[in-house]
Length: 330
Image: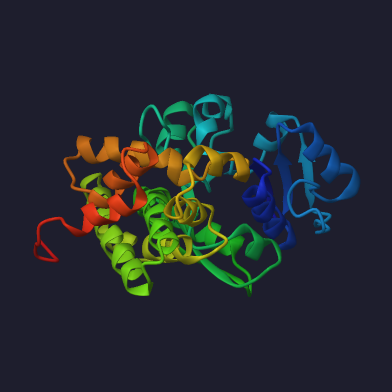
């Protein structure tokens, strides 16, 4: 049966997920603060700022009224992580509403994951879930195959979300490890920056593969210390998302790292891109978490040093490679 679904945030990812759910036969009401986006979808059936050539499903409507989107059985949260502090207190929903985060980041002051933070602000007895995995908006919006994970502590809700999002091209697995799923989506962005640096320096496939593997080891250490399951980080929302973000030319995080590796300044890269890749914002937060939980994260720590221009990309790589030898697993 079709459901009424609110989508908060109509950037590339929000638009792609809203279009996907509408294409599945649901009634989707997307909210955006940008009046131009709402007008474009309402009048032209297109998002002129994201995928302007794509005609959207007739089941996909847009509004500037946040409460209209919140008055839904399921609310998908897809705005930027930097907006969490402002937006979370505004999420007023009825008991029984399913709140699903598709944000891949952390709340910068509390260091909480999006769902953890939202749960501290929502007073209703809602179900809290996360949707994450290796999936680019441009693939989802045109119905190319991908697989993601729907996580909720309530198994029935996770199963419902898997069925809601799944079709012949979009496969959804379930998990009860909401924390692990969210951390995988946030932490991998920092490792993707480092992988981009490797490629920018022309260090080759062997170096990139080693970095991704050791990067997975350190983000798994932190996630487990915070209470997540190690197995989650070896799945789609950990290893899978990391591989995609660290190797694809479409990845903004890899792109930033690549250009840093070629000697460009971060400020110039951000200016030309028009916005900041999530990994740039997440890196200092990961560093704070590593100190809080006493977890060694050398790659993430040196990425921060590079972003702060304390040394060059070549110096960063040399320092990482010159670390004392140790057992692979201990």
